[in-house]
Length: 458
Length: 101
Ligand SMILES: [Zn+2]
Image 1: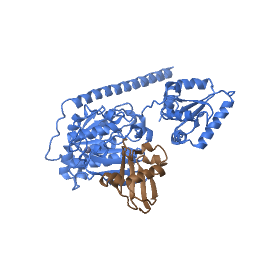
Image 2: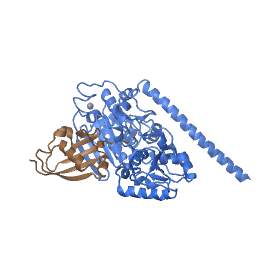
Image 3: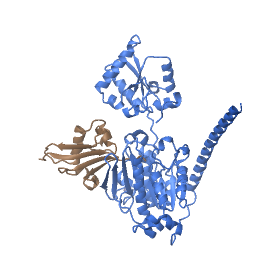
Image 4: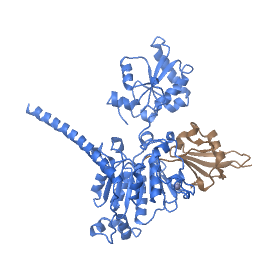
């Protein structure tokens, strides 16, 4: 009896500890947001003091870089007076902030509106398992404080907005764009032009990376290079496209290098160059870029933009890297995962078509589904259509020749499945016999969260 | 009369996904009365290499916003953009800009 009593108490303690942890996380998030809003709106941070010499502890700590003639004591003192704003504490921001902190930068502003998720950890190396659910800006600052407590860390748990960006950027000397979406990239660049700050910008996706230093020594700004934003449907985020963690890691490190060169007075060699990295080929490429454009809307001779604008409207997309939700089909052509579950339980004859790419089907799938990737459907691949028609025929025979046969389409989140339904509607009758195609709202991720918790989420 | 011309055309940053995932294309452009420029090359690519959804690569007679064109490792802005006259053995790269981090 004593044993089970002990076990019960232990379980109870565990449960309460978990509750406590969750509450602490929530409190931290609320405090951080309040503090960030206050900081962004409130009085400017005090300037970093100019000093004539390094302390013996600093000399010991930074000795291996102090003996570099390119840096020296002069460069180190400049670093200690420099404030760097890091926009985004993700795959680029983590390694960047780590090397800047280690090198003895004076102040690091850490901006991120997001919280740590498990799927971040493969590339966002300042956050650990225990930080799940905590604001990334706070988590990054906590890890960096352990690395170098002499650096001032200013976490901002907020999304950079047209209302706050300019005031924030003005308080820093160099800005590093480590963000993950198009509106934020235009916002940061415009704010840097208006505040007259150099911008070291990097990006990464799949197995490639790009780096440019904008608004620096006569070089272009982001708008000079990209006057028009890309259409939202041509932009891929890390969740959809995937990214090998070390690729943003490499780009973030080079970004840190350029920030350190600018901050220490060495100067960046990238003022009119783009660095492209292809991880598959192991190749770096230096691209000669245009100079600042005289007709640029913000940094040109006669700028038409003199303040920050609405960047989400300008780009037609939201300032996060979360997946977009398409709405292509009327509601009667869509069903929920709950409705689909009911239909399965009642053994209603149908075909379930999974339209994800093979690489995602390798991760997880529903055993009774038929796999035909969307690209094959859109390309009207003959072999695939024959296979689908055969499966429909087989199933139909079991239903005493019901007129229109139900075909359900599923993908990861319920976007591609709608496109597939459109294609299937075109093919109905002629190629596939009479079918009624519908898609499953929210896709397999909704299935995992609402119906089967053991189904993997990715 | 422009002689046949050999080019290395490359796609990157995800633009290769519109070309069966193939990044490097060694292409030979046929003889034609007028000289080959980037404008003509884009038309040729649309007819000969582009497999799907051309609007994700070309808009009007130029590349869509967000694609940077590089000619022999230089921004095409420095080279005359659509009017650049191609030379035999030129390297033309179409790179989609990345935004992830
Ligand atoms: Zn500009």
